[in-house]
Structure formats: C-alpha cells, structure tokens
Image 1 (cartoon, protein in one colour):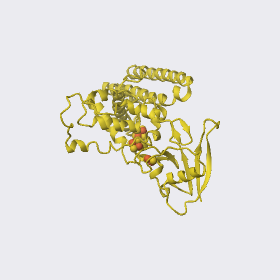
Image 2 (cartoon, rainbow over the protein chains, first blue to last red; image 1 turned 180 degrees about the vertical axis):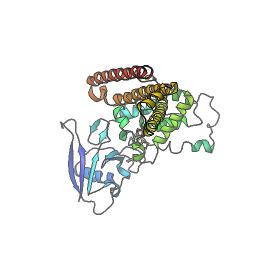
Image 3 (cartoon, rainbow over the protein chains, first blue to last red; image 1 turned 90 degrees about the horizontal axis):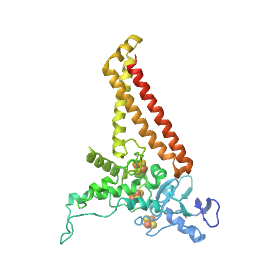
Image 4 (cartoon, rainbow over the protein chains, first blue to last red; image 1 turned 120 degrees about the vertical axis):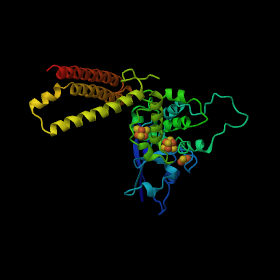
Amino acid sequence: MLQVSIYRYNPETDQQPYMQEFQFDTEGKDLMVLDVLEQIKAQDSSVTYRRSCREGVCGSDGLNINGKNGLACITPLSATVKNNKLVVRPLPGLPVIRDLVVDMSMFYAQYEKIQPYLQNNTPAPAIERLQSPEDRAKLDGLYECILCACCSTSCPSFWWNPDRFIGPAGLLQAYRFLADSRDTATDERLSRLDDPFSVFRCHGIQNCVNVCPKGLNPTRAIGHIRTMLLTRAT
Amino acid sequence: MVTAVTSFGRSGTSDWLVQRVSGVILLAYFLFIAWVVLSGVDYVSWKALFAQTWVRVFSLMALLSLAAHAWIGLWAVVTDYLTERMMGTTGNVLRISSQLAIALVLFVYVVWGVQVLWGY
Ligand code: SF4
Ligand code: SF4
Ligand code: FES
C-alpha cells in the first residue's frame, strides 16, 4: 500500500491547513501522480486540484510532489516515490485557495508586465512577417513554456519578492520576445527590466532549471537578458 | 522604472556591474595582502610598504569597493527578508533602521580608513 499524504485546506471550514493520509493500492502499476489523485477524488470528492489535459501540455496541475515541483500528470510514481510515501502539496509561495489550488494572480501579473506579445512598429506586409530559419531557431527552448509556474514557485527570490521580481517563467518569456527578429520593441522592453528587482533578483540558484517539466532553462535566458542590458548600458 | 531609491545605483544593471567589479578589486587586494603577509613582514617593511602612494591608492580602492560591495549585497538581503510583505510594518521599520546602521558603519569605515592610510 502506498502512503499518500495530501495537503488539505478549506477556508470555509478549516482554521488551519492539515495533511490528510490515504492508503492507496497501485495494484503494482506505475501510475502517474495525477492518476492517484483522480482515484482518491473518486473516493472523497472534496479533494480539490486543477487539471485539464492530463498529458503535460496545459500546465494546470503544477504541484509540489515529494518536495519537488512538477506536473502531476507526467510524473510517474517510480520517479518520485521513496520509502513508499507520496506527499502532495500546493505550489509553494502562492496563496492557497483550497487544498492543492493556488491563486496564480501574482504569477500572471508578472507575466503581463513583460508584455508577452509581438510588437512591431513597421507597416504590416501583405503576407506574414517572415523570419529566417536561423532566426526562428533562436526561439527554440523559449516558446515551449506552458506557464505551469513550477519554476517561479520554486525560486526563493520569487518567494520573497513575487510583486517585484519577474521570476523565471516571466523572464523566459521576456527573452522570447527580446530574441524575436520580428519584434521591434527591444529597447523599451529592456528599459522596463533595468531596475534592481525585475531581473537582477535572480541569483543563479537554478531551482527553476531543476524543476521545469518541459526541460527549459530560464537561468540561461536570464543570463542573455543580463548581457543585453549590459551591452546596451555600456 | 525606479522602484528602489535606496539601491546603490538605482539601476539593476549598474548595481550588478559595480558588484562584479568591486568583487574583482577586493579579490586582487586580498591576494596582494595575503602574499605580503605570507612572504614575511615586520613593522618596518609593513610601514615602508604603506608609505608608497600606489599601495595607499590601491588600499583606498579596496576600501571603497568593500563599502559598495557590502551595500549592494546587504541591500539585497534586507529587501528580501525585512519587508512589509514578510512582516508587516515592522518589516519597513527594521529594514530602514538596518539600512541606516549599515550606511553609518560603512561611512565610518571609509573615513577611518582614509585616516589610517594617510594619517601616519
Ligand atoms: S519555464 Fe518550465 S516550469 Fe516554468 S512555467 Fe514554463 S514550462 Fe513551467
Ligand atoms: S536561477 Fe534565478 S530565476 Fe532560477 S530559481 Fe534561481 S534565482 Fe530563481
Ligand atoms: S493536466 Fe495539463 S499539464 Fe497536467
């Protein structure tokens, strides 16, 4: 029997969050963590979490699984369970709405700040704005982000300053638009990132790289932004 | 976007650069001092060393680097932990008083250092 421990908190009835224990029979199968949650929810429908695609593309089931952030739907038990224990908590550092559901407003507010859309002040051509295959290749490793927040909520700098530090997810997307040959707002984008918090609260701890379920590297993107800021300023 | 009037250069890029450059100067200075000490010093040679203008200038450079480096580093620490978000109004009071204390100590070190370097 797998020992499953789930973070529970219902603001309407609970004074304090608590951990609820469940015994779970995997029948010898290497299930995904999400499968375990689904089956537990079938027993106790009050267990609350977000999920949609159940295949690692929507980014809604980012959770803290045995101490490490990840997507429940693509985390097999074999990759996380040690000593027969599975501990599931909400993503750290964001306010809990209920059980495993967190309020992502602060995370999205940072994403909004980097203006995550293409800006081009030249007249629109009759066809699409074209890009060479080489320029397109610069967006690889950036555009794949699904905004699951696993990275930002594992970053101590984001825990302390979620209102002022953009965080790894937002910065990866900031660089995605800085690196895009079709975007002409590079200078304005960099000006908005120059303060001591937005980018420079990153101390290279690399928790973000360690947890990203899509295998992306926000630290490297942050390094590129820093180089662009320095080049522009000197 | 200026969100931090008490930061060293009001710009993250400039703070970052000052932090790196001052770090290199401090490293060079401490290697220099370590080398002098390890190759054996007595009062006379130590005094002769610091009688040279370049040693005094180098020392002053290290002292100013130390002050800048310490300010930027500690500023980052207090704005992480001593904040309104973390501990309410107490955070603001603690942060501003520690910043005052740090600024005072660093200022005294610099002035005192200048006096030590050029006063003998
Ligand atoms: S960078 Fe990775 S961990 Fe961060 S939000 Fe995007 S997909 Fe999730
Ligand atoms: S490398 Fe930077 S963004 Fe990533 S976890 Fe560390 S401090 Fe946060
Ligand atoms: S449910 Fe969509 S990413 Fe896991």
